[in-house]
Image (cartoon, rainbow, N blue to C red; front, side, top):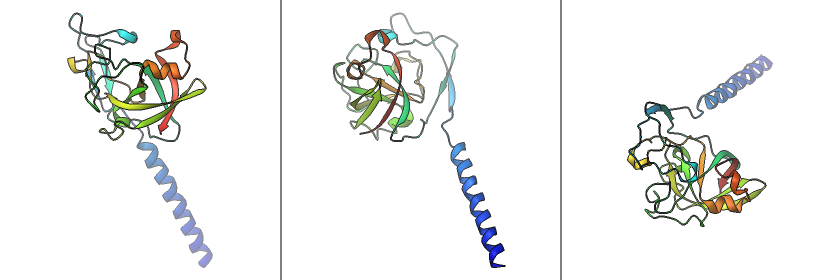
Length: 188
């Protein structure tokens, strides 16, 4: 009888563990909605750094979340100017300032930005066989876009680290390859 109780307890434990794993799997970041693209007014979408402009009537996926953060969080590195007049739009969300493209700064997708929890904190970015420390100064908005506040650019994907030129230089990426690179990052 004691042996069958132990077996039954063990089986119950296995069921609970597997159910927990399934629930965790189901909690992956999924799209939260869509917005429709609006054609930018003439001269309103800054195409510096090959930025995309919204297309009239095109549906863009939005996210309120990002993949879970780990010691080696996979992401897509993109290029952004944080300078006044650059393709980043207005001043940075964290400090309401513009930043030199020669300073290693980044914007994180909405879920990773996490209501400013990473504002002015450093992250370590690894890619192209090198690493660099950069400060989080802005949000790469995954929930909104295609409007004046977002320079008529589409919403960011949920796995973006949008980086200044200084980050790309520090990673040793050839200039003609700037714009999109698979990287990993972690809180510094």
